[in-house]
Amino acid sequence: MRQYLTAALYQFVTLDNYRDLQKPILEHCLMHHIKGTLLLAQEGINGTIAGAPEDIYAVLNYLKQDPRLSALEHKESWADSHPFYRMKVKLKKEIVTMGVLDVDPNLVVGTYVKPEDWNALLNDPEVIVLDTRNDYEVHIGTFKGAVDPKTTTFREFPSFVSQHLDKTKHKKVAMFCTGGIRCEKASSYMKQQGFEEVYHLQGGILKYLETVPKEQSLWEGECFVFDQRVAVKHGLEVGDHDQCFACRMPLTPEEKQSDQYDAGISCPYCYEKLTPEKKESLKERQKQVKLAKLRGQSHIGDVQK
Image 1 (tube, helix red, strand yellow):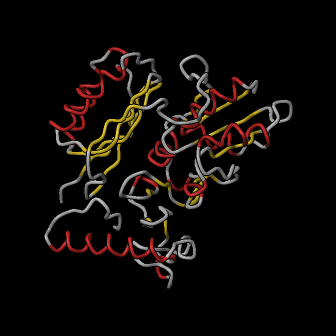
Image 2: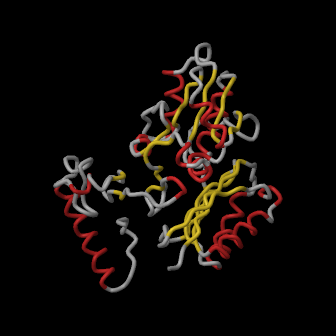
């Protein structure tokens, strides 16, 4: 069975001409049959792409030809089916949206902690550990003892800090996220706010699950990823979660047994919130998905494993 290599990448670096980079990067990805999404902004590059290994490496080498991206790092995982439907290169104000434009990880950032050293921070009673991801991501897995800010978007993180954290009381703060980008920006923000000892997990949860043996791991559950795999577990193997098309909530196999779950239409988290009109629209979309499968085609709305 053919396997697809997935590369998650980001780098905070000043790209004053980021608009000019959009077309050539997209053309190079298409030339190599790569699919996924890359975000470009003045503050850097972020995204996840997938394809044949030789094509992924060709695109990564192309990006690194730009001296500003020569140190670009990425994290690899594998999928049996292509995790993306198309290739997009988008222009953004931020490569990860916090909404505080004077935060610059190129100028100040917290202390990087390697995955193999992360457990020591988790076990330190003087350290408050923050999960900087959104609530639906935390819902399916997080580190033992971590604080869930219960944010629905990363824009809410500064408000959480101002309402719940005190730089005079919380002397040591450690943060983590999926691939490292959100907590890197969050650590920059907290340093800016006067927090002195700020740490963040280098490479994020994905690098931890890839590096730390399962028997030594303090990770509980699965890690949500933003592609058709939905979630991964230790060793970056594809997880057991599916995703509701209507509300995008990750679902366990047990939740899919609910009477309120209807593939592509509803789940226990959104069943009561959907209007009759919305349900009809989703039923029609799901019908088109099934017809496409009968024709041997893929449908962009098909998110079921």
